[in-house]
Length: 354
Image (cartoon, rainbow, N blue to C red; front, side):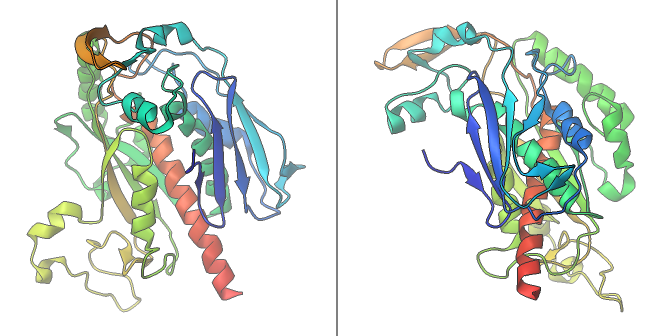
């Protein structure tokens, strides 16, 4: 199986399955001498871990990261950073009913056809539990990117949308509620809605927005390695993501050029920021902002028809512990992937200037 690594210079390779012994990763290319706050890394994992509130999966995992290499006396050594996150609360029998059947809109069918074999326990390698490894690497990347602030938050659940620009929000409020929406009143409504959806055995999608501040001018390459293209790839690699837009996004297609152009101030900043902090594939020093759309979780705790490996129609019902809405736990994952992209381009830029 290919495609288990991300990044050129700051590179992450992950391994492990949802119900295997452990998950883990190797970070290659992290410079030496970076002072790491290990508590901050664990904090990021705690933001993603299951069982943290009443509106997420109730699987109980401590998600404690253990580092095996690349760190000495609290600093990176420049050698590969190896880490592991042990699985402690597997309930593989919850998935025995799908051993020979395919869940709609899951990777079950395509895995079986592509590889001729699949780990049906929680989806195996296709499980979103793999993203715990990304959060570890992203937390280290954040500490490399001193001064750059990456903040994601929930801006939509189902048809409920937070129709306010990030400049009109106190983004710090997002961590004050279990939905991770920076508008307290909207957060309450979203929480009630997710609980209602869960009570019906159904699921709902949503939107995670992200704002990146204090990005220096010059990150990104102008042809195939555009900064926004790599951010899009990073976000679309996250489980359940169905869409990515940055800056004015799809709304920009409805505007006139005379409205959309970001006029310059004398210092090179712009009066507006429809470009979303990126022009010609290169960061321009303004805030980078984007939206990531997540589909409803495919596992439903209700009866439905599907097919088995022999092509016969069978009746199934989801079992086990699943999120009724992934977006609250996806917030730190979006931040982590953004940090990995920026860390990579930071090192590429540094290489160019040496």
